[in-house]
Amino acid sequence: MEFEMRKSKIIIGVAALVIGLGIAFKETIQTNMYAYMHSSMHDSHSANGMSHDMKKSPGLQGVNASQAESEELAIMFENVDTISREVTNLPNGIRTVTRSSNEDVMAVLVSHIVGMVDRVARGDDPEIFIQSPTLDILFANGAEMQSQIDVTDEGIVVIRTSADPDVVTALHIHAAEVSDMADRGMQAVHDAMAQRADH
Image (cartoon, rainbow, N blue to C red; front, side, top):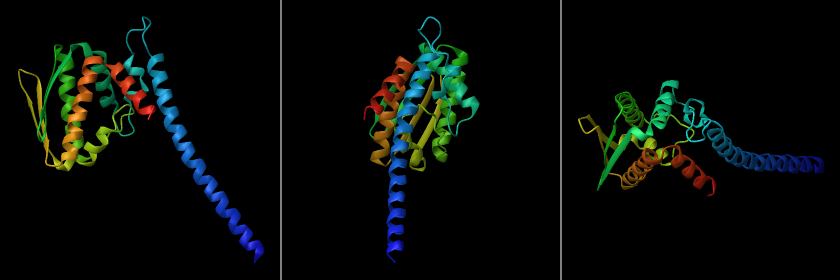
């Protein structure tokens, strides 16, 4: 009996140790993943140190993203200087107008935006490594949003609305995050990831 009790205590102790190590391991993996991607992004700078070789950037890959989607992201980041964007925060959502002065980049923008709006509606998160946690809220609540997309002379116009105030807040935050990337390119991603790693 005493042996059985001792054996049970050992099993419980081992189980607690394994769970504790598992939690610590997960946190270490998350921290190291950020460090690896941040380092890899810097290592993939071109010789003049001013721009990324986006095709080599691991951060643009995703657990559930196609190669074509990752290549679209690379094209947009490589040509961010051609992209401009306007955002209007609505009481129940957002209106965005995104355009590029380069026709080929504009075609990629349209493909990316239409594809992502469709993914959100289906709750089909691509899990791109650099994506903001704000997208978790949007992908989890895609059915709660209404979206309208028009390609006009202005650019690609997207109106997204929701009756859920938390989703509206997430739409506002994500629109600002995308605008920051359109303004500052990969530097905006570096800064956002560094800020998340510090918390």
